[in-house]
Length: 152
Image (tube, rainbow, N blue to C red; front, side, top):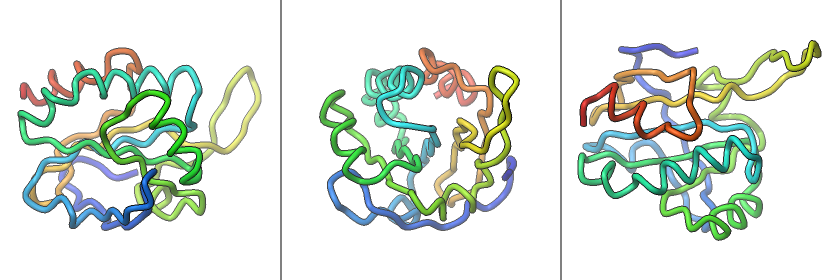
């Protein structure tokens, strides 16, 4: 997994509206780049809605918000519409971006091992350098984690 001070890997993907989004689209802006496992699951919904509810405060501080999961574009479109999400959700079913950021691997739940996405948020500066990594995401209070880290 990438760490503070690393250059964020460039990426390009399609969001819920069919728009091509890439990291260089955000040059000059800080970015909250959050990776989440699956649309319409309780934790992922809580996290997305918490970011939605604090979206204007993030924008006022110069942050763009981008979500990425292995779901496809159609799933993102429905999820975004259902919860009125104002930020792009990039579909990465081939895990190209997910693998580049090192957020896929072996997980354990109820004693069983399986492969899956590690819920992780990267805060990038205006030049695409990772300012911080949140790997213990509080889904109902994720925005507060970001605000507390960066006193934004």
